[in-house]
Length: 137
Image (cartoon, helix red, strand yellow):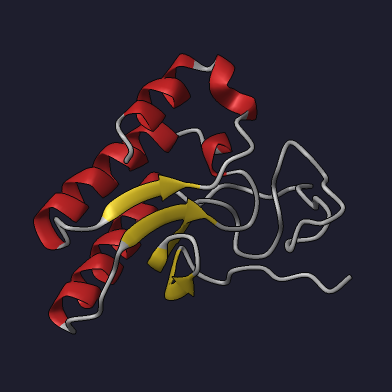
């Protein structure tokens, strides 16, 4: 099976049948999949997390600000900002802080957009993940 990895922290917007115009947020490494599962049907292929590091919070924030602001400035329709990407987004150690930052940026630049997370829900035992997910549309 061919695999597909996102090569940036912010990607799209991508036309989604489920969500509309979706601006993607990839909190995982750009060159490998990191996930707690190895699903045979995953578009990102098999885990290859040896030596892989999560993007830094500061780098994510900078890229998010740039990408979301660009959509507003260029009048690009965004229905939803979606945490997805090269694996399981809730694995990022700063997931809760990143969610707060995305909410702030959304409110500033794209107040009509919703926020979504594509997750396998494995980390619902972590209170910080639960708290972050409860803030999301």
